[in-house]
Length: 137
Image (cartoon, rainbow, N blue to C red; front, side, top):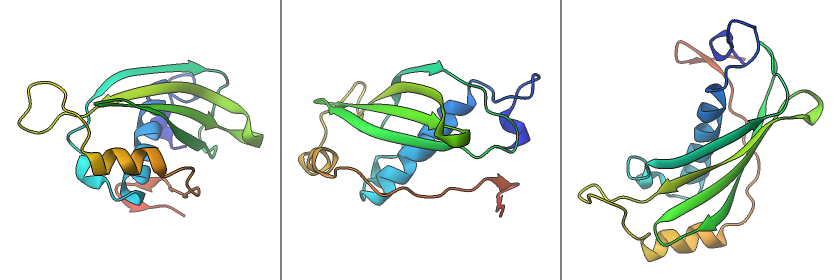
């Protein structure tokens, strides 16, 4: 976790969890060959329960699971883990599918629905922090 992820008290700012969850989502969609969905999936619900503090310099792990594929929505559950795999935050996020020319939601294309419902658990992926866009070791 970087300094910019913290608040005045020195622990992680509540909004940081949204970025971590969206980063995990981006990894998942790229891995599943669904990166073309970027820009057509607005967030319609986000909730989080903050269970423990995370501090500057602490490594975190974000787990993201697809829990439901609706006609035009996708439900995720997430867990953010800190030191010794302790839960720091849990919650859920719901996105909707909205084609670029649509004024509301649009159904998932059949091929996207198939991938989202059949992919199953994915192997973890390490994402490191960046400083000014340059990956840090």
